[in-house]
Length: 329
Ligand code: SAM
Ligand code: SF4
Image (cartoon, rainbow, N blue to C red; front, side, top):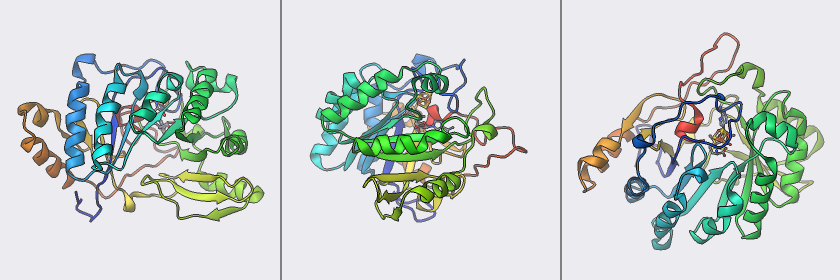
């Protein structure tokens, strides 16, 4: 699949549910209205959609959410999609999770063919964890991470850099992750969906964080790539990898290879734009996939050049109205 700007689209992210067992302050408001369950595609329909994308050239699939591991029977979907790894049609099947259910599911993920996972964790402090996630228990995340490592999954820790909230902990998070042999990636907060607080207060540019870390550690340039938006350095003192996802301070759209599917079958060609394609109608119109494949082709012609994220005090409304949990991070 080629978009109008010559970019090959080889990576599909699928939000399998918009629901979550946490309410992270930068992601959701406390009182969220979720989609009625009847609007959700079944797991079989999600499989059919993902398989159509794989036939059209997607090589990497990430299941995300909301919290993907709270969707009932989601392991059935991982197992089913694992067949594309066995045939060689797919290079990688992976997941982004908050870790709360990982202790239960790590072994099954591994046996479905998942090799690497991303776990989101913004602090090591139990009280701060409660403040950030509102509903989460950090102990279950630690147990989940340990189980994932025990069964042989490679784990990357993702943390959103939040001014005054985890700003003072970034170095200790990195040292902790590297100490356990995990990569560590920092993310800038993006203006998506209404939250109860003010994003201007939370926004911490990673250019500042990077400069601070560079004052204490030797950050060696690295051309390591995972097919995602992160840019990596190697930290000489720890031997670990440190990634930066900087949608605000450095726009990475020129190398974008991704599209995103929601659990209702809406395809967003860009995380930061509202234009979307309805694939559910094409999916349900026929048991054959011709119409679906035509709808995917048409959507690719509409992939925009990039997003227009800005966070500053003059712009109070989020750049896009939907929450990250709908399109999947
Ligand atoms: N629930 C899973 C999790 O937390 O890993 C998967 C979905 S979550 C939406 C995916 C990633 O997006 C997480 O790393 C989360 O921290 C990040 N995220 C959520 N809202 C964000 C925002 N407004 N700006 C930047 N990152 C955000
Ligand atoms: Fe849930 Fe992930 Fe959003 Fe936190 S970041 S509320 S864990 S979807």
